[in-house]
Image (cartoon, rainbow over all chains, first blue to last red; front, top):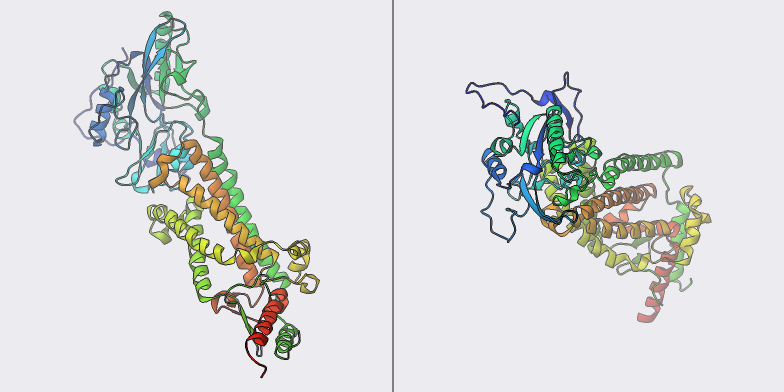
Length: 316
Length: 232
């Protein structure tokens, strides 16, 4: 068993990280922090999940969201998708393993992966609406959010959702407010089987290594850690029994990365676009300075008068 | 005679100088609604395009207001421009002399009007602006709807939305470029702006820049005059 985080003390304590620990801030820059925090991570061991949804409940409770009362659509997911009020969702898939002939019930807790290279932050046009702390947490700052939905296009995991109430984007915060006072995320706290554990990223990798070794000894030869390098690694990682086929787990992307379309949009287009417009305006100014205005001459006016006079006298 | 590219409301008034009616009141109002929308769209769009221009969103009441207003102004522009399109498309059809004019674009920029062919109501440059605006506006409204989060986010996949926003931003840069050409040409070629403010240009302006159009107006007037009323 991974040693659980102790309960919080009843005395008030100062947050362990704040704006001075930002390493990235959307549509703006931040100074390099004086010292880097230890990177944290949440490890979700899919093989230990029993699908109880305690994590969803804890998430609702801690974040004080008020999802609509759901309905039974005939499948286990409830609600059917992530919503602005449901930051994490158990996704269930049934897989007929062709090798063993077993029907496997693969349950994955979906939610923000807290990418080291966050696509949402890269796409965001509003200064300071999305921030990344040096401990790896990617957080949305709602008073700066303009509700454009660019984060949705930037995210390789389809996570952010725009609220129809306040028109700002919502997602898992990795319980940054709890982590700031030495607690782990609410979902990890609530998980009855330790399928969700929280600690430093190194601790989580070590723990995952032990879990993978155990799974391999039980015949899951492809067991492995999901910490996709395409997005620089993530601060929410999975232990998968079929790490060679992550897409089995409700379409978990095999090699997620920020879409090249987003790279082009936020890269070359942005810089080349403004350059082209600046040059166009500059060329116009220069042309005018060199050429001077193109004026209508006296002769032009006289010619026009002759033409219309010609008209009056029946000539053309 | 069949109108070459004379539009409704175009007329000449003899005098010193000769004046020529170029745009009706309705066309001018239509133009300035479109122009205002385009400028507002460019400002609000640029504020969401490059972080260094985000401060421009302050003109609209902040980022959230900018996000809310931009697509609605786009809808206004689309319908307003559709009005201009219906008014102007015929006179903007490509004619043989336009190729020659375009081939001598160096003379255009050097203001050597004497080397240029006589052109009708619009020259090839103006026609380029007209068609570029038309095509880009269709691209912008269609890609814009795909990324209009509030109403249309459910109707396109995220992959389609990514493509749409890239297309939208490239088309936006292009249309602002076309707008710079349009505005610069109107400023450089003196006597032009009056066409869209008071609706008139001088005969000399028409002679210098749109001689075919002027000749045609004269011909129409004399044809009309001899047919409808006796000689003075």
